[in-house]
Length: 117
Image (cartoon, rainbow, N blue to C red; front, side, top):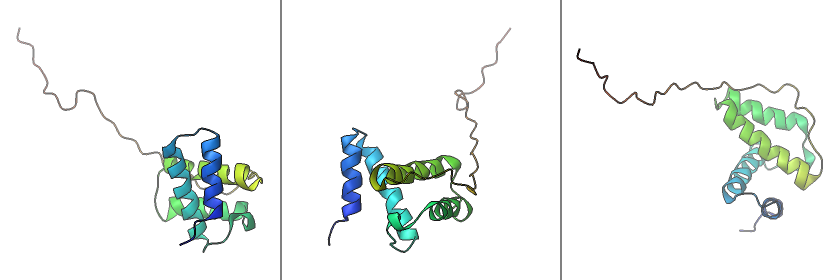
């Protein structure tokens, strides 16, 4: 199976910028999902509308929180700005995911101590 020239360019650019290996894996994952979502269309043939459609799909159909949507957005911004050389505009019409609120107390697993006195 042939390796994608586009994904090789992304790996090279991420490494040139000395970004972490985990960031590289994450960016490759989101960019691959973006391309597959649009039926293997090359990103240079797509633009803001397709990016907004994909990011909105993540929130409305996949129900991802805003932090995950932002991660995908950053990966796609990286692709367009540094690989394709066509930075994306403001992404009008983007639906924001919800911020999950998790309340955790440091002492939630400890028993309450009752003072004798």
